[in-house]
Length: 304
Image (cartoon, rainbow, N blue to C red; front, side):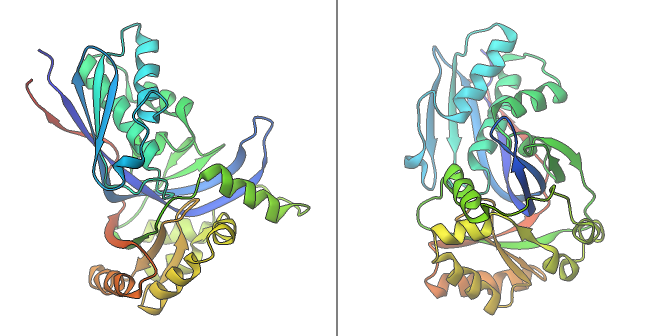
């Protein structure tokens, strides 16, 4: 019997998200600086008679468990490329916020590609998996790569970045989610009639990452979607203020939100900021996590 394969895959935070104009394909040009952080989903692929999905963990009841799930689409894309049947049970153990701007669904798709590649022995190379990931969505390649990277195009064209040391973060989770298309639509509405410069990565931010200087990184953090997320969910401003008042070096909305991220000076400061956020009543919960961390990797081959 083939052995089930379990892959652990990280969440991401955009330490910079610069958004350009709308492309002919309907996507926006981006310069997105990704950092993988230590909140993880695990995807286990087990032999089965057909494709099915189960899920556990926080907010797992909000996941579609049919073939519209991005993880199911990942399995189907891999088998279509290799001419085999998508007979697999995918179990997703959630710990990344659902619809929280931290690429949880994309992480699950990336984990599925790696887990099914291992289960079925398709022998897909890293470059092939990255190519398939890009077909699935703009944020899917990065969880495979992990670490830190600059994403260009619609975010799928990755250039690895050097980061010294470990940065300490706290993430405040909000009730409910914010659909990414709705946030982009609000972003376009707010920017209507304005000149749109080509998106560029900040040299100051890249240098701060290279040196691992949290104090220098803090003022360089930016997210062009933040104003749109705050327009749709004004209460996030109180969460950002609570974390800043507790001593965070910087605060921003994660991607399209509604999760908010707080850069701290060190692990002790992260503990203080997390406690203050929990006490503030402005978020559902708060989690501390380091970054950068490695991308998707196999953690178990278990005999059936």
